[in-house]
Image (cartoon, rainbow, N blue to C red; front, top):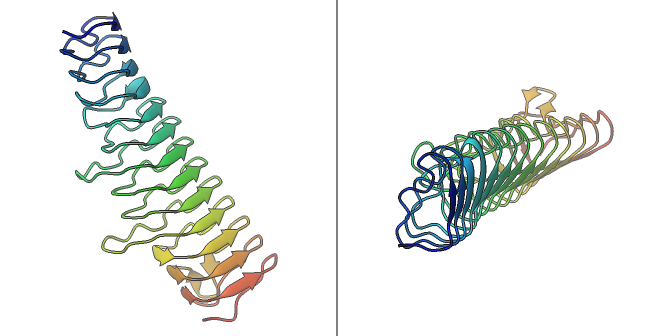
Length: 231
């Protein structure tokens, strides 16, 4: 059986077979580990049996699908997450990600509820409470700020990528789009016709910088409260 394991709590790490150098603290912590090594589980559900080098801390954090090189810190962080090389710090960060059976890899989510409903997302960085909360099949997106891209990039069947969103509530409602830049409070969130629903290759810089139409392509808008001239 495994060696050099530290197990503290009722049932902690009770399924470890050949895994070694694991630390499990708390009732039921690390109960899915079998052959995995160098994992830390404190009050946590995961990781998967063969995962290595994970850190999962928090009540109900992680699950038995969490794979290697993953860090989850916070109550319920990553509790439906499947995939490897993910980092989630904050209560419910990446909480319901992959609940539909998909898999997400190489994401960083910092903040309460950040990326909590994302599905099949890869190589994204979200910092700020509820940032990039609902993304689906999105990759290489940076969202920084409270509710930045909160409800954005969530349309199933599209591959949204290469977006940079910085500012509270920026680009919050864009359902689909790629290669956009939004910088400023509520930048790229609305248009003269209502919310911006889709956007590609557009730039919005300034507080409340907005587009002309609900669909924006190749539009550049710079200035506090400025409105673009359309595609």
